[in-house]
Image (cartoon, rainbow, N blue to C red):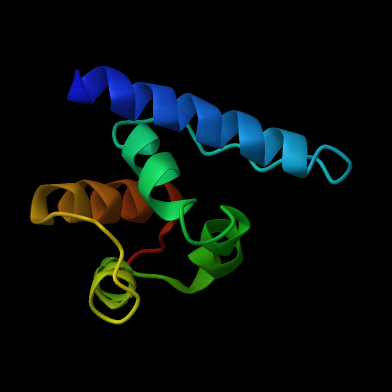
Length: 98
């Protein structure tokens, strides 16, 4: 049930993002492992544009710090396993070497 709920939330989040930005050309997260978790967990607090805006600058260590900040400073409801998945996804698809 939890897996189905996560997928439903991801679909809603991706649809909402697309609808909200239809006039701008919606940001679509790159396909890959962890995409659904990123969509569900990150869009709860901010636009997915935040990811793309920061991506040219972010190394794995910086994505780790950013995700930790979202959890510790802003209270994002992200468990340790999801945080790792988010960091891995962001590093692979929106990170830079280093």
